[in-house]
Length: 366
Image (cartoon, rainbow, N blue to C red; front, side):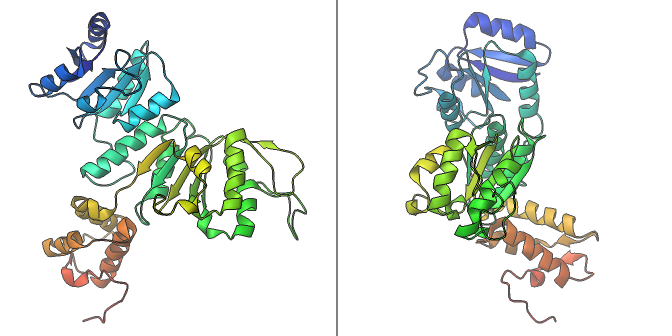
C-alpha cells in the first residue's frame, strides 16, 4: 500500500483521516517536521501532507525540512493568497483548505502519485521535474504568473499548459508577443481601438477583450514600452480598459501570464517596478538546456519521432555530440539541429556525428 506522511495535524484528525483513506493509502502520522524527517529514513513515502496551522504561518516553519524531493500538499483552515504564494515558494506542490474535501484530496493524490508529471516538458532531470511540478501547482490558482527563461526554453508552451490545466481551460488563450509591435501599435493590439481613433482605424477589440474569460499571455512583456506598461497597470488594477479613442470603459476578466527572456535584475529600467509587482505573484523559471544535459537525448528522440516517420535513430557518438553542446538557443535550437540531421542523413537509418551540424552554416554534402 502507498505510504503518505501526515505531518503536523492534530492526532485525532490524523486518525480520522487515516481511517477514511485506509484501503487506498497508508497514512503515517508525524506530529512535527522533525519526526517526519526521521520517518523518511525508515520508510518509503510517496507524498507528504503538511498541516501548517500549528506552525508559524509567517515563516512556514518546517516546510523546507519536510521537502525532500516528494510532493508536499499543504493543509490549512484559512487560505490567504499571500500564504499560498509563500507556501509554493517554500516548495509546496499543492494547497488544500480544511475541513478537507476527501474526494478532492484523493484526486490530488492520484495525480501526484501517478506517473511523473512531464506535460508539457520532456525530460527526467530534477530541474525540469521541478518546473513541471510548479506549473501544475500554479494552474490551480488564478494569480498572475511570470515565466522567466532564455529564448527557446519553451515559455509559450508552458503558458499554454498553465491555461489548459486551469479552471479557465474552456475559455480563450490569447498569446501576444510584445516585441513584435512598435510602440505606436502595441496599445491598440492590447486594448483595442474605436472607429476613427487613428487614420483608417475601425472598431475592434484588443487582446484583453479577446482573452476575457480565459488567459492572456504577454510574451517579452519587458519590450512593451513604458507608456503601454502604464495603461497595462491600470487595467490589471481595475479590471477595466478603454479602447484607444474609446468613450467608455469595458470590463475584462483574464488571468495574465507574462514572460521575459531578459534578466530584470540587471535591466530594471525595462519594466515599471509597480507593474512588475503586479505580474510576478507566481514565478516560473525555466532552466536552460545546458543545465539539464541529461534531457538532451530524450528531447532529440522526441523531435526525431515527431518529424520523421522512417525508423531512424541516433548513434551513440551522435548523442554524445549533442549532449556536449551548450545550446545557446536551447530546446528550439536542438529541434532545428535534429531536423537538419534528418535531411542530411537522407534514407540512412542511423544519424551519425557527421550529420550533426550545430551552426547554421550548411556544409558541402559528401
